[in-house]
Image (cartoon, rainbow, N blue to C red; front, side, top):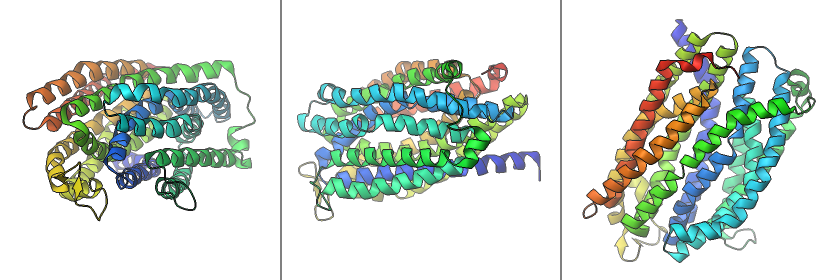
Length: 460
């Protein structure tokens, strides 16, 4: 077997549990969208409005996993396993300090923020209710869970995360059924019920992670819950994670993007975009899963003093990601009309949606943006994977600056231009072209930096 095939097999073995776990998360997102969509257009539009807002908060506050993973992978390569326990304990202290204020923000911010994003009071109210449960009730748990994930990802123990992900997602779907529709004696809560279900499932995932990490074998080998937190290591975790948090603020352009969609195409365009967003999220999470495995291997090889090997893993990961995402995009494109038709139908008993507009008309509006964005996701996979590889090498500042610049200098102007240029014929299509421009620019910036190789000499 050639060295290239050995590397690909090692990458695929490490990435497969992460990818499956990520796919299971997006399937829960599909379940959220499908179940909420059955309760009405306003609920679905509210979910679409809340999704990018939550994503920004999620990326900002869960970024501690980045520093945790990078440090643990580097210590793995250095064969310094007990210090990974110190990294974990230090990061968990940070998680509490970050997570509790984060949840308080999620309780009070949505009622102020959402009316400014949507002119439709009912849509804004649904979005605020969802966020108060999903963000306000669950963000502190998400932060803690992602510290555990960073620890297990950094050590290459990705099957543990898969196990927890399956439990989380199974609980989430069941609780969706309970709270969205009002089963088992619960009051029907609509979109807010989806937020509550996720918050409870997050609590379950933290409990399971903690129990698994307290096992004797983990405490003996990695000093988990034995090693005391250290200020110096906590500072390193924060230094590697903070640029990721700032980078997440750049992703507020997603909120502006959906605001442009709402202004250009109305509630109809927003509801269609909510479905497109969910399915693009599927390919994004697959790429993130491969990128996460790549970051671990890059960190490990740099810890061993093998930067050339780390570089090879980056390009092998790109080939793997492009191939997998191409297959997924091809499958989705074959069933694009059926997918949109199912998610844009309020119920199987109704044939109308958005007043007197039939579902078939909505599908016709949404199918071209959906197909075009599936193509752009193939390109986006390059940027996603290499950005994770760069983060794994400690090249966090460049990734942060690139995200900020591309988001605001490329994506938003291109979105405004596209919506304006196609205002009379296809404003929704015009807006999504702007997101496509973002994908191309992001992939190009990450590929250039990886090839340049300045990340090879970074110490963490």
